[in-house]
Amino acid sequence: MTTITQTQTRTNLAPKRLGKLAVNLNAILAIAYRDFLKLLRDRARIFSTFLFPLIFIGFLGGGMQATFGARSGYNFLAFVFTGVLAQTLFQSTALGIISLFEDRANDFSQEIFIAPISRYSIVFGKILGETLVALPQGLGIILFGFILGVPMNFAQVVGLVVVSLIASLYGGAFGMMILGMVPSRRAADQLFPFVFLPQFFTAGVFVPLQNLPLPLEIVSLLSPLRYAVDVTRNVFYAGTADFDAVVLSPLWVNLAVLGGSFVVFMFIGTLLFVRAERNR
Amino acid sequence: MTPIIQVSHLIKRYKNTQTNAVDDISFHVAPGEFFVLLGPNGAGKTTTISILTTTLAPTSGKIEIAGHDLVNDSNGVRESVGIIFQNPSLDQNLTAEENVRLHATMYGLYPFRPAYWMMPRAYKDQIRELAEILGIQNEIHKPIKTYSGGMKRKLEIIRSLIHHPRVLFLDEPTTGLDPVSRRSLWDYLTQVRAEKETTVFLTTHYLEEAEQADTICILDRGEIVAQGTPEQVKANLVENYLLLDAADRDALRQELRRHKISFVELPLFKIELNGNSDHHLTPHQLLKMIDTPLTTVKIHSPSVEDAYLAILKAHDDDHTNANPH
Picture 1 (cartoon, rainbow over the protein chains, first blue to last red):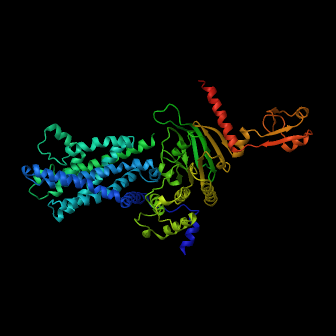
Picture 2 (picture 1 turned 120 degrees about the vertical axis):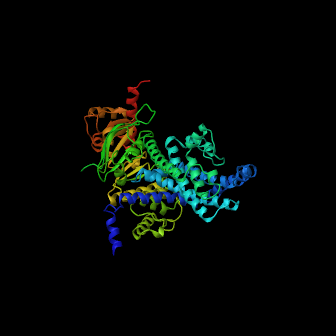
Picture 3 (picture 1 turned 45 degrees about the horizontal axis):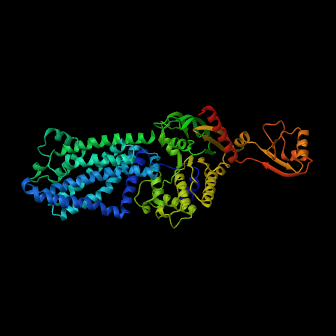
């Protein structure tokens, strides 16, 4: 009985809408899911995302284990594995956020930016979407680690999945801030190597950071990636003999820095990006 | 009636530029009106429509749309308008239905669901209806990539209408479409206007599209150079005239002088029908007065295109006189 009346009244009445908060939450999910669907439909991209970490962990980790492993006193493969896991996810979402520029170029972002929702919802939906895209990569890396012989138990795997989520979200917020500060895709592409490559070292992805001289220690403390890497090792090495040799700061310190800077990055990034978009 | 769009003293100057892209324009649009913003490339049409649709911030000026202040209540404005951008804004990786679903969720019409079959009945009914209008019952779940240009445009319009906007903005929607698609899109828009009483705000440089408008506003170099109904714009700025010729041109000349009808020899005899002369004659009255056998009779009645070109030319001349180089 209702179908007919609904059709008749629909033309004249404004449609019933969800409440403000509900709209925003649903919109975040819808925007995020769109990115995930895109990944599922892009087989080539899925394949290529697995290749890079495989090379890193397999060759670099394996090679370094052979040369330094014995002297460092702990499993170097596992050390590089945890570093690369955090680094890959962090970088993947950060670079993914740059697709906001791409959307703008093919004009799809206009459709999102005219929606009657908070700008923060748009950005958070985008970060969540890139996180959903990065997570399968994380699972892939964990699987490679396992195949290559990184020793891990079930609890560690669960812990890695959780920190993968954290590293991805955090990378997204970081990418958003970079995005807010640069005027174009080209500028972003030029800036990204300077932002990411040094962090391979300052965040301790491949090299241990214990006993750094003070100036380098300060640079390291200012590297956002350091906390994502360290939280990963916090979880992975918890309760093992190598914990003290590998982990830099306690878990709560890492989580506090990650949480705090996530909020700051996202807030500043969104503000700058929206302002740059509208105040041309 | 309170205008649904009210723009006063809108100015937009882009960063690092010396001139205003939109230079102090004011206009209003009544509810249900079909309003056309005309102008050459670079006149400021897209700038204006981008500001009205909240994607670009104005430099100064006051704008109200459907009772919402553009600067302080952009989300209020966003809820009340639908927008068709100059470039297609569909997501190529998604199906038609997924594009519509994303839109519906972002406008708060339905909660998010990851798949079509999970959506509520009302939504599915709506989709079925839309597919029928478009004649794509079989393709609605196929990726956008497979659609023709005209089809995509129609889909965008349908998508923008599902949240029942009070104003539909269209920024050169028919650019790049073939004549058949253009006509069919046009018919569809006319139908939408009739059924839903949606206010339509269109920018175009196809002049025949402006003929059906309620109001035309001509923009050039960021300024409004003419505004009114198509008839007013034509009447105020363009002459209606008659062109005559005869084998015996001396006889015709003398006869016209005898009747005190002013004319110009081009070499055809050009006679103003309205405006400048003190005669306000219909072509019929005029022809009845002439006995000399005529070899040529031509009535010039302007199209919007003539008016448009004349107006732009006049504005151009003003500019050249004002800033001699």
